[in-house]
Amino acid sequence: MAIRYDETAVGTELPAQSFPVTRATLVQYAGASGDFNPIHWNEKFAKEVGLPDVIAHGMFTMAEAVRVVTDWVGDPGAVVEYGVRFTRPVPVPNDGVGSVIEVTGKVAKLLEDRKVQVDLVATYGGQKVLGMSRAVVRLV
Image 1 (tube, rainbow, N blue to C red):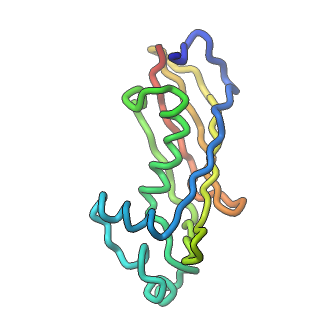
Image 2 (image 1 turned 135 degrees about the vertical axis):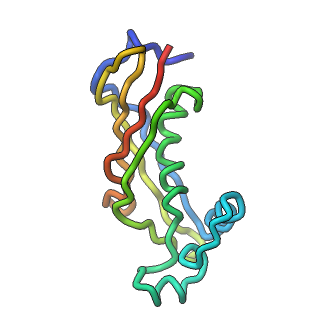
């Protein structure tokens, strides 16, 4: 069922989601994206450059966050604009469990041409990892 513009209001909350991230996830993303920076797979190197551990790719974190919007609207093509600021890395320990990115979203504005602005909050360990995370979505 499509989300209808005329049935959407400012403050509408999108279903929250949790996204697990393991070292295997990072290897898969590196292969798909071509980003083999050692901070995403080499724990020794990551710590030598001042990171707490291997960290998730920023673009991976950004992509997981927008899934809350695409799952809600049901059509990734409905997202007409999306942007974030990277505020904090997501460390991914090599413990077989990894990390979890928690994402919530809320309709912040009704715009012209059947579009809405959705503001997202992405956290890891209770701290925001993306700032100014917003998507503009065209509804039916």
